[in-house]
Amino acid sequence: MTRLSNDPAAFADEALEGFVAAHPRRVRQVPGGVVRATRTAPGQVAVVVGGGSGHYPAFSGLVGQGLAHGAAVGNVFASPSAHQVRQVARAAETGGGVLLAYGNYAGDVLHFGQAAGQLTAEGIPARTLGVTDDMSSASPEEAHKRRGVAGDLVVFKAAAAAAEAGHPLDEVTRIAELANARTRSFGVAFSGCTLPGADHPLFTVPEGRMAVGLGIHGEPGMGERPVPTADEAAELLVSTVLGELPEGVEAPRGQRAAVILNGLGSVKYEELFVVYRRVAQLLADAGVEAVDPEVGELVTSFDMAGVSLTLCWLTDELEPLWTAPADAPAYRKGTVEAADLVVPDPSAETAEDTVPPATDESREAARTVLAALRVLKDTVDVHADELGRIDAVAGDGDHGIGMRRGSTGAYEAAVRAETLGAGAETLLHRAADAWADRAGGTSGALWGVILRAVGTALGDTARPTAAEVASGVAQASAGVRELGGAEVGDKTMVDVLVPFSYALTAATRAGQPLATAWDTAAHSASAAAEATADLLPRMGRARPHAEKSLGTPDAGAHSLALIVRAVHGVFVPTLENH
Image (cartoon, rainbow, N blue to C red):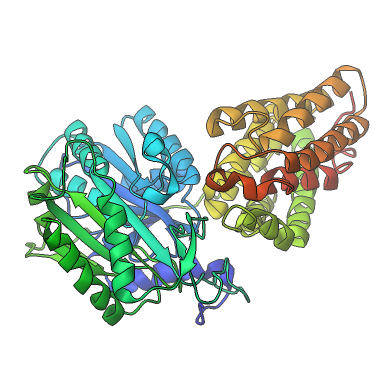
C-alpha cells in the first residue's frame, strides 16, 4: 500500500514537485506536467507522452535527451486533460510539430485527441498515437482497441530517437506506428494496489491465485489460475507472446527483438531476474535474439504485485532507434552529450486573474450556478464510495474518485470566478476546465463538455431562460456523443443524458417553468439510469468483461442521475421560468 502521503488529493502534484526537485538537470516543471530541462534543436519534432500518475517511471521519468521531450501528467490513474496536454506541448515544441503518444485508454484518447485538434488549429502541427501492445485486452481482430502497457517505452523510444535524428513529423509518426504494430505485451498479477489515502485495495486477487492479463488499473484480464513457480510464469509469458506474431514475422527463429520484463510495483528486482533467467532461455530456444533487454520497473501500478513481458520485433530501421543513447531520469542508455539548460521565462506562466465583463443579471445567475455546483459536489462526496463499488464490478473502480476530484475542482474554480465577478458563462467555462484538469479520464473530458456547453448557452450578458438552459443541456448531449462516440444502449452516461435532455426540452417547449420541467426530466434520468442494469457495455474498460456488469447500473449513468435529481430547484430564484 501507499504509506507515505499527506493529503491524498494532493498526492500527484506533490509527487511531481518532488520528482522535479530531484532531477533539475533533466526536467523542469511546466503547467500540466514536465518538459526537458535541456535545449532542443530548433525545428525538431517534439515527442510528448503522458497519462495518469501512479505508473512511474511512466510517464515523467521518460523525459530527457533521446527520449520524450515532455510528459503531460494526470492525476492518479487518470489521463491528463486536453488543457494540460496542450500546455506541455506548447512548452516542448520548437517548430517541428508534436507527436502526442499515450496508452490507448478511453480518457487518453479523448484528451490527447482534443489537444491535437486544438494545437493544429493554433498553427502547431500535431499527430497522435495510442499504444496498443496489451494482448489480453482485445483480440487480434480488434487490436486497435487494445490498451498500452510496458510497450509504451519501445514506441516512445523509437519515436524520440527518430525525432533526434531530424526526421519530420509524418516520418516520426510512421516510425512510431511501425514500432507499435510490432510490439506485444502480456502480464500477470498476484495482488491489487492501494491508492494514496485508501484503506483497502482498488481491486483484489484471491489468495493463492494469479490474475492472467490483468490491466494496470485493475481492469479484468483473461481469468485466474494458481500461483506458478518463477519458471512456470516465464513459460506462460513467453508462450503467450510468441503465440501472436505481428504481420511480416513468419516465425520467431532468426528474429531480433527488444525485450522488456517489467515489474508492476512490488515484485522485487531479484525476483524479476529469476524470471528473466528462464525467459532468456526460452527465447534463445525459440531462435529469438534479445537486443538490449530491459529488466526492471518501466510501467508500474503503485504496489501491485505483478510482472509483464514485452517483445518488439525489430527491423533494420527500428533496431538502431531502440539502441540509440538516451538520458532521462528513469532510463539511461549509452552516452548523451549534455545540451545547455533552458532558462525559463517567468512571465510565460501567469494565472488567470481576470474575467470578461458581465451584466448584473448574468452575475446573479452565476451565483445560482455556483450554488448548483456546490450541491453537485456535496452529492458526489456522499455517493463516491457507492460509485466506486458500482464501477468496480466490471471496471477499475475509480469512478467515484474521479468524480470527487472533478466536482471539487470545478466548484473551487467557480468560487474563484464568482469572486472576480464572472457571469454565468465564464463561471461554467472555468469550472469545466478545472473538472477536466482535476479528474482527467473519460468522465473528466465529458463533464468538461457538459459544463462548457451549458455555460455557452447561458452567456454573460442576460438573465438565462428555461429554454436556454434546455438548449445548453441539448448541446451538452450532442457534444458528449460526438466526443465519446457512445449512443443510447452502449451502457454509458449517454443513456441518461439523452432522455434527460429530451424530456427537459419537451417540457420547456410546452411552457413548463424550469423547476417543473427539471423535475420531470430528472425522473426520466432516474428511470434511465436504473434501466442500464439490463444492458451490456459496448464501450470502455468494462467492455471486455461485459457479462460481469449485467444486473448493475452503469456508474457514469447513475452518477449523472443522482446529480440532476440533487440540483432540482436550485436554479429557480435566478433563472427565468419561461
